[in-house]
Image 1: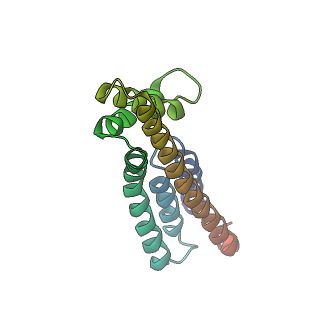
Image 2: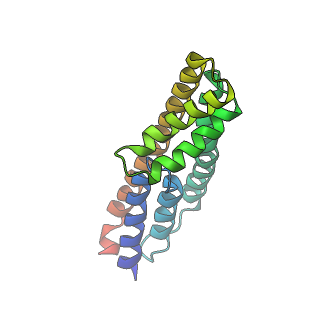
Image 3: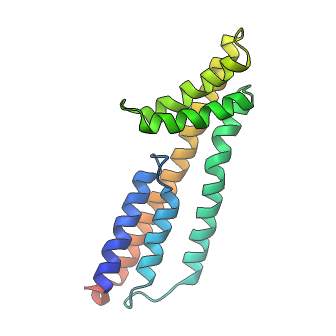
Length: 166
C-alpha cells in the first residue's frame, strides 16, 4: 500500500508541475495532494506543520491565480471588458487546436475585450492586453516555482525515509 501511495503522490506532484502552466489543472493543489499522499504512508511520520504551511501556500496561490492576471490588465489601463476577455480568451485558448493557445488566448481575449469597450483607442487596448499577458505569465511562474519546491520537498522526504519505504 505504501508503494501505491508513493507512486500516486509522485504522479500528483509531477502533474502539479505541469498544471502550473496549464490553466485547466490546478497545479499547486494537485502538488499538495501528492504531498498529503506521501504522509499517508506508514513509513513517513505525519508532519502537520509541513502539510499545514504547504496548504496555506496552496490556498494563497489559488487566490492569486485569479487576482494577478486581472490586476495586470487593470495596471496597464484595462477595463472590466479586458478582464473578462482575458478569462474567456484563456478558456478558448486551452481548447483551440493551435500551439500555445493557452498563452495566445488571454492576450487576444483582452485585446478583443478592450476593443469592444473602446474601439477607437487601439493603443490602450494593446497595452491592456500586454498587461493581461504579463499577469498570466507572472502567475504561472509563481505557481511553477512553488510546484517545483513541492516536488523537491517530496523527493527530500522520500530520500530521508527510503529505507522504510522500499
